[in-house]
Image (cartoon, helix red, strand yellow):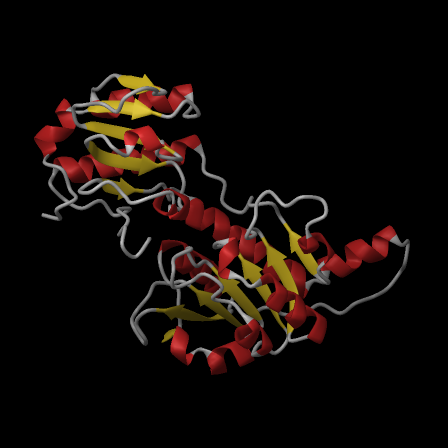
Length: 316
């Protein structure tokens, strides 16, 4: 058994805490799933007895207590892990739910909008300008998707269903991954980037991915549209701007930014041929939190590592 997986008996004896922002319906479901009363909100000294916590952030005062398991209501856990050393021995799980499906549909929507010149038609409408523009077929073209996990695979699967060739960039080359025609490593992505019509990032933020998309990668895109649904800080924004202005990057769709929310004077709003969608591609629903927490609870009760467990060393 993984050392961070608590014994089933410990779960039923633990206190169950939930952040104040966790909705009332979710709290009721947490109590139904566990049979434990939920204590919502917390202040003061950390509990002396083992406890479970559900929320978006782990308050500093709780990091010193005997935390057994923290379930994040978000898919990304970089903010949790960067806030300080993770409590020794504590399990961390995250909420994915139907996020892969939501994000995949978001990406497909922008891919098709690209092919049908939707941004151009919207601009022409605003100018009351009649201009015919031929459409472009998505099928037969190539999308390179960075990240071959649950979200990346969902994106690739939906694009592939539309006849788009999908190349995944992951840690293991050539490995079978759902939704991908081929998988390469980040050290071997040059040819794939050059042939891509769309480059999609689903990367988490870790020490290895900070600033991952820099001048070299953007310069290597042959006019591809760049779509970021991963984490904003994986992108060097100055390098992206240079790529857009040189034409190496044809368009950009940014659901995430290094600093959020973006202020009105943030340079991102003035990037050419770019749309910012305010971190809306895969908003977590209450049902996602409940479904994934229940799956984790069932796995732990059976002594298994939950599918959404996070490796706190790797950061995902």
